[in-house]
Image (cartoon, rainbow over all chains, first blue to last red):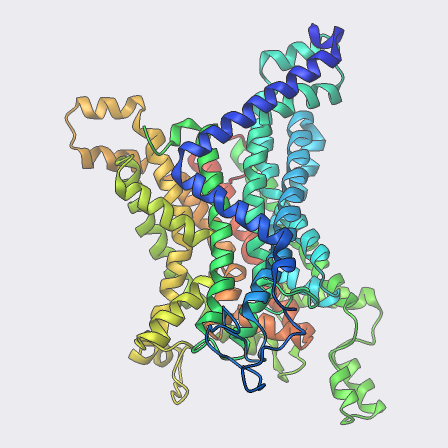
Length: 306
Length: 331
């Protein structure tokens, strides 16, 4: 076997294969107008997350917008002083919107990656070994299924001071079960294929077989669920912030919505509601649309266009 | 014992064990919470030390931890959840009406969306590549991926504030003083408050059912048994009905799982609409550190999930014997 004699060369060719796959997926996404639109939104969102706080014309919390006469502009509609209007405390909505993208990006990215990585590992190990390992890990996923996410997250966040890393960890700790189950069922079928069996027969270790023969074949579905994990994490973070369990030191889109809701100004201040609401809706939907197109690559049976 | 019976027994035992672990986790987390629910009463100076000791023993908080744990387990088993600290009422008296308020909103919404969006999904799947299919997929993806409170806020702004067709908050108008559940729920005033949250819930859940049904029909469409039906001369609609019937199982299983997750998913919906349900009550109880109320509410939510998972697994194993009966559940 070439993998045994020239491990390095095999590794490079694997990386090449992977790269070709990534490029193919990219080309595919460009064909699908919905997924392509989603990619543009995601790109814009990542840009906002990285540079939004720097672009913000004012400090989202410290600065108070003042009108010509020097008086504080409270709840004023969009104008030359504040392009997106002001909040009931006279804060600049545009600055809050720009700064609020960052926590959303951090939790979405790391929550999603954590969910995907954890679920993928559990799924591969559980499916590959079977037996008591499988039994143990699957009962563990059952346990996270039976602890209701929202109430448990609320409990934990009252008990510990919320910060975005803690929120990210809680989200990943509860959501990995989804990819774990799907990846496991894929591994169960891959495990029975000839090349895996021959790798085992030729003396490859369990770790090696898992890493080189099983994992690459279930990677696409792992990526797919990582993408969904990103959307779930963003939605969960926004929801927690809306309920008042977000990071109190950071402006986030969910927190903006909480403030406009709690202050009772939702009826009048549409300029305060729309930016964060559209921001969250756009990014979660975009990630899902990309995932959807990607799902069709993995499972061509369900493609939209024949 | 048949294989299926053994599977049932094992699955049931696992559910009992999971319930035990889940309630233990809740117990530990609550005991680890800093501060005590009585602190507010003590610091306000309304109680002296003697009264505090008395209250603590009344709630069993002076007992050793293991005894509190045993008491807690027995109380859950008998559904005697103790007294709510801040409402000075038995927990169940507080929770029961709220539970019913939640169920009356969520169960009809879930049933409606399961039926309507599954039918729509089947139709869309049958007419693959049509404009209807694309539109339904995009709109339901938008609705299911957007957090429900954002959709709710959007609907409130449009229908309650701009058009002023429906009220934005509450379950009944403030002046309504109904005496019984029947009087509460059978009235125009209630219906008026009901429409908006109901619609949002239906739309929020539509996505998953629609996609499941659509994918099921699309996968069945090319299969042999439908060719036979076509050859027999069945109309398009009759063929669709058969393809649809054959993709019912995942929808049914998913429905059961959703039913179990119903309370927690809609905590946000209840908060936005000020709907006096169990989810909103839980958020309030957590903020006020009302232990007995919190643990009862979380217990009910966890129990619903565990029972629904059990039901889904059993359903699946019963209707589709090809599914391995060694614990590989649905989803």
